[in-house]
Length: 555
Image 1 (cartoon, rainbow, N blue to C red):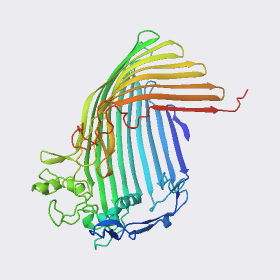
Image 2 (spheres, rainbow, N blue to C red):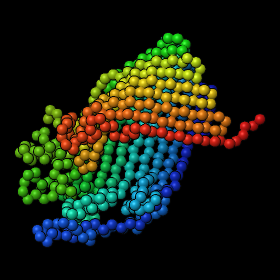
Image 3 (cartoon, rainbow, N blue to C red):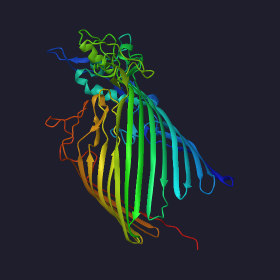
């Protein structure tokens, strides 16, 4: 690190770093024997099992101790420029690159910190961020501008042998993957059914904020401003099966059993203002309002390929793709009739795929909406207001009591799986009473709250084990939390605890539907049912720690 003056009004700081984290996971020797010859029922000749004489896998060439390593390096640089006694400009830049090998999880069935991987799994994650802060005064008002741009591309290779293991076992009564699905090369010979994934993200984010604040020492003070943010992400996931037949692959991409290639754009806008009035030296009231708007879109392709010779509903069809799926991937791509290819073939409408505007390397478009004869990105947008009202009372030094009534929101979004509707924003209305106290070496804080969680977002695994996000009903949350600490000399003691009583007010439907689901009375579709707690909400939480620091201070 260097920190040095450039001139009387300019200073420079630079930092460079390099770090290597040693591995602790062992990739141990392992083999796999997949289903080959089917076992037939002697009565009707149907398949009832398999002999594991199919493809044999061995990871001997990838065995290595402590194989998960991470090397990170980069740097930061900043200038601070005092234009005059009122205005300061601070440009900064930061870059970091992280290179990984291996994985950071293990299979407890094999042993502590041990796993079995059948491929090298390198990954690179890097980012560069540029930022500019301008601070100054107009009259006695403080002006702050903060802008930043970040570019974060990453890519990796991941072994997906576990997928073949799981599904070969799952389909064993059907003869395993080899007999239930279609893993062949162009000559009709069986191929290794194991997959591996390549791909990553090309993420960019730009944000701008302008804030104006009246003097903080005034009895009545205000803050106001505007905010804008734009995020883009080029999403790429390529699932490979080496030597897979062209007709079983994603169209135009031999050897890919699945492809996700999508462009996501998230835009956020906000105007905000807040005012505080000191009713007395001990009592202050604050009120704030924020107008928000979000506009999120996704466009592209996700799914399997489709053999051009396969026609929905026809007899004597060849396999549509390696897994035999007739509903996903190219089958969901839009045609010039406005239907999906699958529906166009069933309905007898035009089956010409729309490829104009398709992302390079994809066969067609299935993550989009058909509007007025053309395809537009799937969209989730909304606007509205949130608020915060707060009162604080400081009866004496070391004591503060507060009450808050506030509303927050989380933007809606888009399911990347074709055929699913976007999900709406969810909102949290919070009523809270709390205290912050300090008595010499002892500090005690706490809060009691009641919350209404409206149309909360939740996720579950849908078709093809892809995550689906949708809105549930409303929930109510009551709770209390507290933390206490004691610090004296070299001794520090800390403890915290929380109790939360959360209940959903109506049945929540785990149904991947194109429209908002209403599954009341439908068996097996409620997750969780009315009166239960939302997922991932523990009722009681607590933690504690202590430390003793030994040393001396010079006289």
